[in-house]
Length: 333
Ligand code: PA5
Image (cartoon, rainbow, N blue to C red):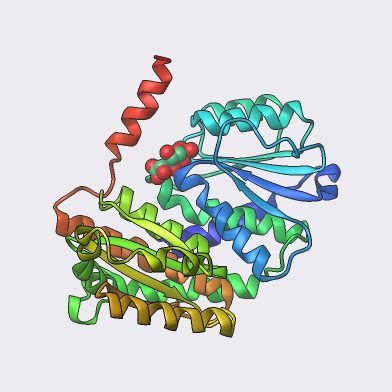
């Protein structure tokens, strides 16, 4: 199943979920998850901020929960496997605080615990690596938050974004040669380099997603930073060490929905990168509409990381170091 179809399925599934009345009183939302299951929370947070939402949306990547989470905080526990210990710890903490909880998972302990408590659960039926279930980790909570009035998102907007993804699939796919395939061309430029992904506002979570896709799919170092903050520190550091300057490739992810001041910062920052001799390139979000910009950019980054994996001669699917850590931690030593 492609991302477009997965998005539609996840959105429709979440729309069918009936939430208990008290969930509708929630004053804020916290998405608890790790890695590929947490990124949807960041994308929601960016959308909420972009729309000027008056009720906060947070992402939590840790054990337990922040002290402010209470019975009026909707907690969405997101774990593809359902066995991620940090997310299970957050889930248990949410129940202790009396918070309304929704589980988003394909199975594991999270599903078992949620079922035992009779909690609303969104079943991830998509099969793949956890990070590739982004249609679920983003669109399912998006449907819930739109229903609860935290965010605006119409079916038309979802359809428009999905339509863009379908079009992009035929632009970035394997049969499309490098000369006309933006994802392959990007991977070629990044080969042997350290991708540093810059973004701002609506695309802040997207940059993090690019970084994590480069880490997990291409098994390569990558970093992400956001404007305007990076203009107050990172821009001062490009010269040293020389090995870092020569290894870096800065990607400036842009959206026409960013404010004129931020867009001016992109230009000014690129001028510094040029002056300092740091390889860089601006990447503009495809499509129309904020949701389309987020999803289209996520998609391009995933394809680019996939092609980078192939160039590096690594299998994009397994994540042995993550598996080792989970196993080691499970042994308790
Ligand atoms: O994509 C991956 O494999 C990881 O980033 C996982 O998402 C992360 O380790 C958390 O696991 P899960 O998504 O099963 O909760």
